[in-house]
Image (cartoon, rainbow, N blue to C red):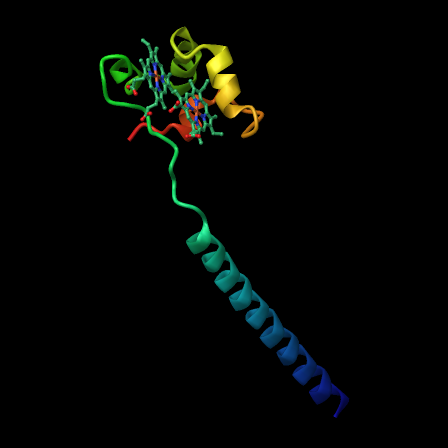
Length: 94
Ligand code: HEC
Ligand code: HEC
């Protein structure tokens, strides 16, 4: 008898874990579907930016400030991130 009880207790626990897992999955899906659309401008395809598409990201990012002055960049992004220098992380090359 005692053995059977333990057995159902184990089954209940497994069922509970499965339900928790499904609920977590649904939660993640809801979260992702509600995430805001990407509105950040991607890297423009023009004479100023074309050379950056083939370049190593970190190398390219160092060159952005030749034209986008640190003041501009900082002013626009000062609230958004401590990682402002990783331009291509947000301004995607697509
Ligand atoms: C040679 C000068 C120059 C360099 C270097 C440069 N940019 Fe620009 N960038 C411009 C100019 C000029 C504009 C504004 C005209 C335009 O929208 O194309 C601009 C606009 C942009 C925009 C806004 C596009 C939009 O749709 O409003 C983004 C984003 C951008 N640059 C990102 C970058 C990143 C990231 C780098 C470095 C990888 C970079 N730029 C390097 C000159 C430059
Ligand atoms: C954490 C994400 C993030 C990073 C990192 C980032 N940006 Fe932006 N950037 C944005 C967003 C979001 C906007 C749109 C701001 C808006 O429209 O109000 C933007 C706007 C811009 C614009 C357009 C400004 C305009 O007037 O239309 C330029 C140019 C730009 N960023 C250049 C850069 C450069 C150069 C770097 C790297 C030094 C950089 N960004 C790093 C998120 C980022």
